[in-house]
Image (cartoon, rainbow, N blue to C red; front, side, top):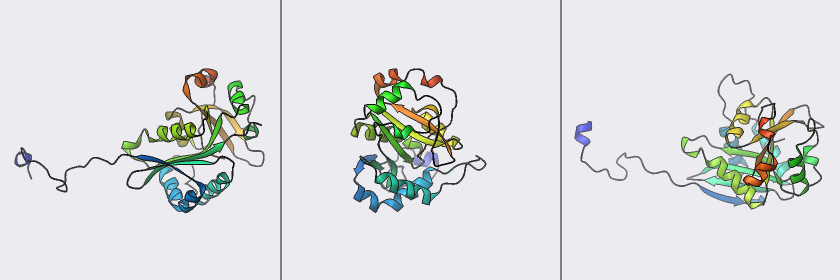
Length: 223
């Protein structure tokens, strides 16, 4: 049909006209529901970690992701929020950081004072992963998932670790509001991570003033 022939004619549902996308719904899951969605979450992980050829970082490891998910599910306070449209389009999960500061063991240098204080007070929540199926309409979905999970757990600060070689994930997290505070190496591992934090609200942001200027860029992820 030419442009002239189509002028003045109304379109009907199903005749090829673009339809509005269904809204994204956020939903909390308990451990039992997560167990039943393990393979779907692994599929989402692989899709969300698609990288451009030559970016220098390894391909997504589905088995490693499932192992991490299993480990995190056993932690006290484990929480999951998923995003659904016609199917699964996003997910964020994690657990509260213990007040003894053990989650930060292996941090290179002195942990920023504000981060240490929030850890002791029980205000830090560690993200195991944030997964978003690539789609131009979902640019704000990661922020929604982050906010929902932190709000549900009444946390003032999000925290996560990213392999320092995974620059793509690091850059993406920064675009979602995360701040890189330094390097961390797990005592029993050989991988060096970048430690990132996500302040909630103006008061927490003020307590972390100056972190933005810290050297070392990198990115987040889960240990």
